[in-house]
Each structure stands twice: as C-alpha cells, then as structure tokens.
Length: 157
Image 1: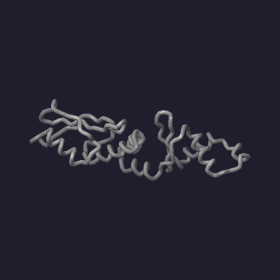
Image 2 (image 1 turned 30 degrees about the vertical axis):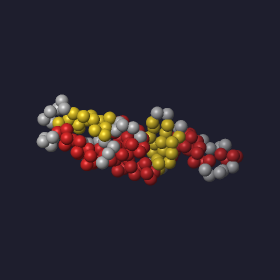
Image 3 (image 1 turned 90 degrees about the vertical axis):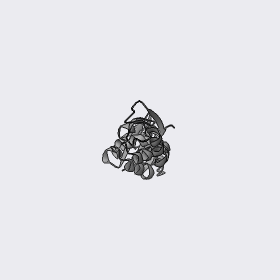
Image 4 (image 1 turned 45 degrees about the vertical axis):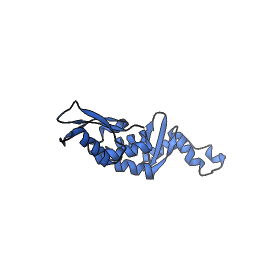
C-alpha cells in the first residue's frame, strides 16, 4: 500500500514531490530539506493512501509517520478509527491492539459467534434472538463497531 504526502516549498509552490510517509521521520525530513534546499518552509499539500484519515492528520511529521504505520498495518480500518477518534492516533492504535474482537458480516453474526463459543445446547440457542442481542450489545455500550464495505468490525468498549 502506497502511503504518501505531497510536499511543496513555500518559496516555490510549483516545485513539489510525493514522499513515502511510511518511513522514519528523519528520512522524510531529509527529503523535505532536499526539496526546499535553503528554505525551511514547506507545505504538505496532499495525502495519498490515508483513506478518510487524511482530513484528521496534521502537518506534524511525527503524527504523519504514526498514522502511516498504523494504516500500513491495519489498512482502512485504522483510518476509520482515526476518524472516529477525531485524529487521535493513539486511541485508534489502542483499540486495534487491545479491543478488537473481529470482523463479521453483520452484528447478528457477531452475536451468534459469541453464543457459539459458550457451547450452549441447541434447545436453548434456538430461542435466542441474535439480531436483538447484537443491537443490545451495541446500544448498551459494551461494544462499538466500524463498518467497511460489507463487513462489521467489532471492538470491546
């Protein structure tokens, strides 16, 4: 996956280039110095590969690197969590590393899966309304979800 920033020099705004954001901060700064030469001032004019998180990522190189690494590791799911956490990359990372339950086709499938792990007798399972159970877990705040394409990603709250 290509995760890049487009950097231009303030003194020469037509002079710019795409820089790989998924590398160490010092290498990004080095490329910016080469682009801008004597002029320390630059503008990050565009983002590529950040999905929806591009609107939340600041111009801070450290933050860009953290976001790029997280998106590189987890893809669009990381981007959506960065958005859901209003740009807080640490919160998004914590959710992915500590609270992720799994990917399901629906909230109902998640509820069914959680009951199947209990090995309850079929006579009892037949009475469970999995759709209501899934919605109940969501509305109670025990879980939160992120939907991407046709998948529901479930996280513990």
